[in-house]
Length: 437
Ligand code: 5CA
Image (cartoon, rainbow, N blue to C red; front, side, top):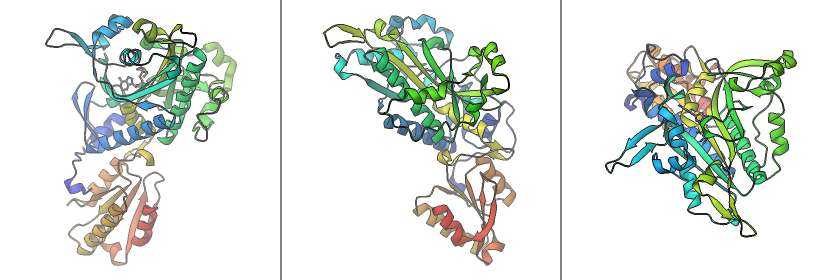
């Protein structure tokens, strides 16, 4: 991609409306633009990151045996009346009336709709378990949308739903999601701590939130210090093994969000307790037959008896993660993307496009990287070196390959690692070999 042709409207000044660093940096780096309060357009750079996060989330959901579907954003009110949530949900629900005067709504979540699909399709216990998910935009008319995409009104969520014959099987499904979430956050370059949580409007009797530590988190969390030091990546765990002992390891110690904190436990833990602010990047719920009873999601059991299926729901805030990753990884110059989600791997900076040797070397490097499938953005704009450095630091790609007229005379370039901050003067060949690795 050539920067001279790329839609990257960066801003030099900090936008006044943005209170937190991720919101400021996303606006400044030309990733998003606000359309109305809590509703954003995603520009090319922002959309690349969103798609990468979505792909990592999808990959792990598929690996754990989950099946992708796509449900609509607009839902009929009837099914929400059946579950009793049409009135309970209150002003957060965006209600719509269609031309036939039918009550509709923009889905804030999908328990009712997926339960109805299940109820109309599955009849026998032999077809269980079923695990379904989709990645779709949601709308919640938050009273105070803030922090950019972290608390939006329209936001992208991966929401999944499990259907099982009894509570033991449902627990197995819950455990699979629990592990899939830990793996997903690790693949995104994040350390997310599972915590017991309140179930809120989703309901049910078991729930965990996954939080990453960041100063601007909305929740004041407390946990045993070991969770901050523990490897939470779960990468070597197989979904077919008994996951309960693993889950136990990640839940046996104290870890609670602000509404679940227990002063007595914290006092007893003494020096072992740590408090911090956290951002909720996922939330899983087990709620038994709450929706299946009301929406008729019943199957026939081994003796022909009718059984309401045991359900759970499992959400990851895909668009929130873009902001959360920035909160966890930035410096005073801009974003520092973890490799897995970086919009491009390399930023190639041509310090003087009027210098023939410099431009010939850059064009060749650009073509070599591009044809080897390396995601590269080439700053071929007519601009001052200072402005080019500032923009490249702001957008935070893992590598910067800097080519100037003086160095190129002796064949040398500068390779800068944005994550470690290391800079090296090396030959163009060595730099390309490193980047092609
Ligand atoms: N139906 C359940 C699970 S599928 C559910 O809706 N859970 S939730 O309400 O906890 O949302 C799941 C995740 O979506 C949250 O953990 C959070 O990361 C993200 N999320 C929730 N509200 C917002 C919002 N207003 N803006 C951005 N992300 C949000």
